[in-house]
Amino acid sequence: MKYGCIGEHLSHSFSKEIHNRIESYAYELCEVPKDKLDEFMTKREFYAINVTIPYKQDVIPFLDCIDDMAKEIGAVNTIVNRDGKLYGYNTDFMGMLALSCKIGIDFKEKKVLVLGTGGTSKTAVAVAKSEGAKEIVIVSRRGGENCVTYDQAKKLHHDCQIVINTTPCGMYPQNDGMPIDLHDYPAVEGVLDAVYNPLVTRLVCEATKKGIKAECGLYMLVAQAVFAAEKFTGKAYDRKIIDRVFKETLASKQNIVLTGMPGSGKTTVGKLLSTMTGRPFTDTDERIVEKHGDISTIFAKQGEGIFRDFETQAVKMISENCGQIIATGGGAILRQQNMDALKSNGKVFFIDRPLENLIPTDDRPLANNAEAIQKRYAERYQKYCDSADVIINADCPIEQVAQKILEKME
Image (cartoon, rainbow, N blue to C red; front, top):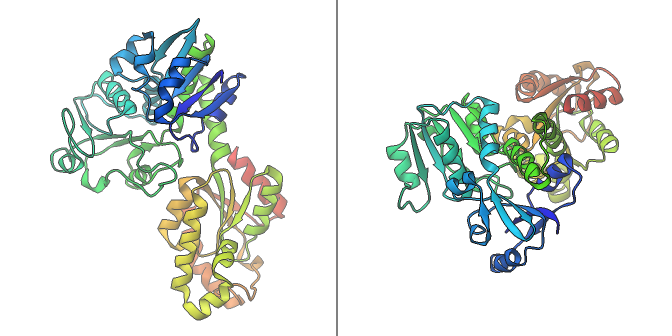
């Protein structure tokens, strides 16, 4: 390996794709078990690497030189091999600073809660301190010297104003995780989550619902990668490259989620989009049929409530993956947990086809005649609008509908 990223588990990592968008060097992901780290670092068989969980502190004893920023933070995420000597840097600092600037978080004279005690936690503390935070409280599961437990944080520091999550809680494949409940912290005005997969964690989702400035870690990941690439190559990159690579990466990873009335053409448009983009296509209703059988039979024998439970299970499982086209059932928007799951990795497009163009069919239990369709339309139309990121006027051929969606993704 010449260039790459080392960590214990990297199946979730976007780093290879990001570096390939920055520079032309061959970048690899290299999972290193804990009992093999000494051997890997001692051999020094690389030009330059990034370091991620859980090795940002463990690699330090193997380095010949550490720059002042990394030394002060006590964590290294970038190592360059120059003539057999290893030089360590921390580009996470500039990455997290760029993320906080992106959404306009002001640390000055604020009380900051940093969740976690690893290498990224040390970076978060350094950023908050450099930006003038009044008080910084570190939280860990066990507590200890210079940090408090989560129970102690809730009791003693519920007045914190900024929260930075540096734990893996909420990270793929445990997307349901949320390190704290924001209801316990009523003064919070800003949330940064270093997790970038899923694209929107439950923590950031809940913060956004409350009107709190919040962002996950993809922008931080891209920014630190650009600064790392400067160390790798010796080049100075225009800072505009951060925004470009972020937008390209987000667009490639975000699912295209299609919602709308039964008969609005979600499946037809989804399959066309799949052909146009090469992305895999998934239909939540088809997934339910594969596992539980015919939808009309489920409604008739088990009731709508059981079907909705099956639907929620299917939505949750499908939404955990990135880069797909997802067509949802007409009633998926009825449960907020479905929409939260779909938006964790997706952009939601409401296929707004006029009522007169919606044709009833026997395989749709709640829309199998004109009267039923009219009733569902009246009940759900505003929910479709409210839950969508983009409303697509579908009073046109499906090719035009698909093209409109792709333009909005770009």
